[in-house]
Image (cartoon, rainbow, N blue to C red):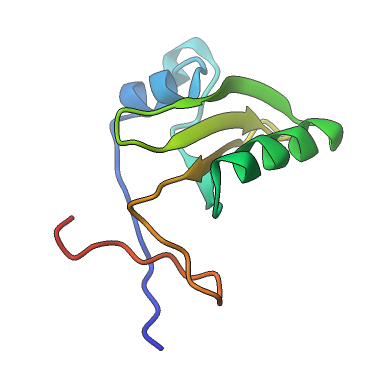
Length: 104
């Protein structure tokens, strides 16, 4: 089975705005977020709640996105930003691999 590694780059200000955190100039966000893709919209809410119960702080509540998905952000206890996302355009197979369409 073919495995793919996906790297998405955004400008620091754009990613900080999306994540709901301060930019590096203001002493906040370091310019990187880890993303965890899940299989359903409900799984986003479940993962966000689990993160909070483990000590995370919500930086951007889960919301509907213009790309027809649903995602939210939290900062872990060390301040690292995480995105939890459900993207119906990126299906996840039985092994947990994300399939990104070739058109992207």
